[in-house]
Image 1 (cartoon, rainbow, N blue to C red):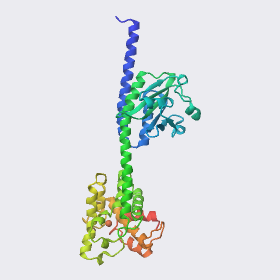
Image 2: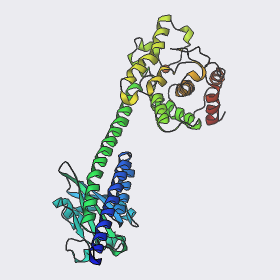
Image 3: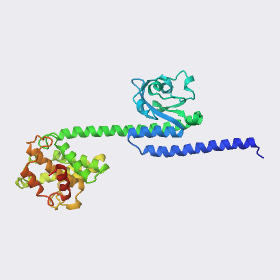
Amino acid sequence: MIDDKNNIVEDNKFSELKKKLLQLDALNKITFDLTHTIDLDILLNKIINYATIIVEGEAASILLLDQEKRELSFQASLGKKSKEIRGYKVKVGEGIAGWVAENGISLIVNDVSKDKRWKKIFDEKTKFKTKSIICVPLILEKEILGVMEVVNKKENKLFDKNDEQTLTSFANQAVVVLRNANIIRDLNNYFVNIMEILIQAIESDPLGPKGYFMQVARLATQVGNKLGIVGKEYNNLYYAALLHNIGKLKTNHKIDLSFKPRPRENLTPIIQKEISMHPIIGANMLKQIHLFKDLAPIILHHHENYDGSGYPKGLKGEEIPLASRIIAVVEDFTNILYNNSKNNYVENSLPDKEALKRFFSFTGKKYDPKIINVLKEIIKV
Ligand SMILES: [Fe+2]
């Protein structure tokens, strides 16, 4: 027989268990969401948002540690005063966050006014009233990367050991996804900078004057945007436009592949053959690089003609990748601008009228009419 007292104890145990199960389920869902987020700022905001939910807090912050300066800086904050707090710094050892960063252990303070470690300077600056706080270290491979804190348990409740365990488990998972996002950010940074160096290296006569490839890429993405190209395809178009002639670096007769215009019919068959190789060489160069492999087909076909008379495969119409068709149009149009300004391109310079007339006469033959129409909209002719 179970008396009333035992019933209450069992009920409490059951509700505790149910709460833990709900928290565990939430943690799993959160981890899944976080591992699918790669933007660092979005990730930091999601983490603190989830932190407040799982321990029922009013506001939360993540402070990352600068090992050299021995100080923590607020990277992301959630709550009414989040904007004011961002960028604030705390010395290791100072305040509750600094204490947690120094000792590497979590801390619950349910009445900050009675804790000597508490520094009210941020509350004074932001006019926020902190009552209770739970703060856990962010540790990865024994190294303290920062701290995560949640303040003011809702409904005037107190933070407890269960909250501490849950927040610590969550912090352990959060640091792994943060580390991954940091790696991705570093890779992106590396990628963008290497691209710039590469473009500067190829932007030299005879391949193309300064700013030329950037101009082609900018106009190609403008056209692409109007044609509804977005996301990854948009990025591919941009990078393919920047690198479309990279194959020329590896062809022989570099001087004869000059950027400067020369009717194709005036070229010797050997040089013509050499020219027709640069899309193949460029595509082969780029497909070796995993990040660039989607650019290879765009670059391979950027000299195909809409009527099938181009090279290297003689594809026609919609068989030619859309990005290749855009680059074909934009490249020739940019050449007119550059030639008109004697290889010294000036923003908003007007193309030579005769050259422009000749260029448009290839609509439907060399160029996709749909793309020419979009270009006309952009350049307002
Ligand atoms: Fe080309």
